[in-house]
Amino acid sequence: MTQQIYVLNGPNLNLLGTREPEIYGSKTLDDIDQQLRQAAPSAEITFRQTNSEGELIDWVQEASKAAQILIINAGAYTHTSVALHDALRACEADIYEVHISNPAAREPFRTTNYVAPCAKACIAGFGARGYLMALTAALQE
Image 1 (cartoon, rainbow, N blue to C red):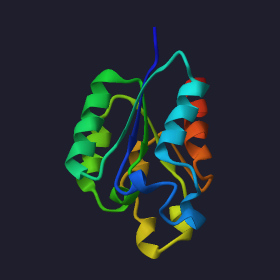
Image 2: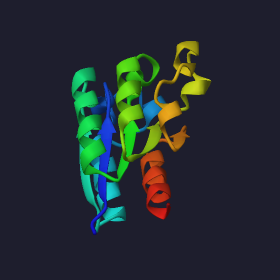
Image 3: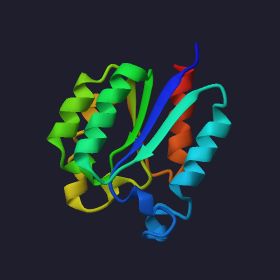
């Protein structure tokens, strides 16, 4: 059976490669998508990004029914969205949280995390490599 994996990205992650490269690096979401597909060629990967909280929640609900693994970088919604937290709590897929930077080492408001209580693991501060680390961990479960 083919592994169904959703990789969901929240607000401003479409700017990767140009937005604050000293924090987020030079890789784009397309680069990350290609890296994951090369690392897991037999998996069915759905890779998406949105700036809309409601759309991200819809995708989490879709992943709950369609995927075994959900890798999520909720961006700023990590720190603000109780609605996203509730959707993740209801999600039946194994959830892996990814952050390119280390939110705990940044502004104090970033220490609030509504995703972490729903995730099997959180990988933060390893740059774009964090996505591959999450995928590798998830596939080894």
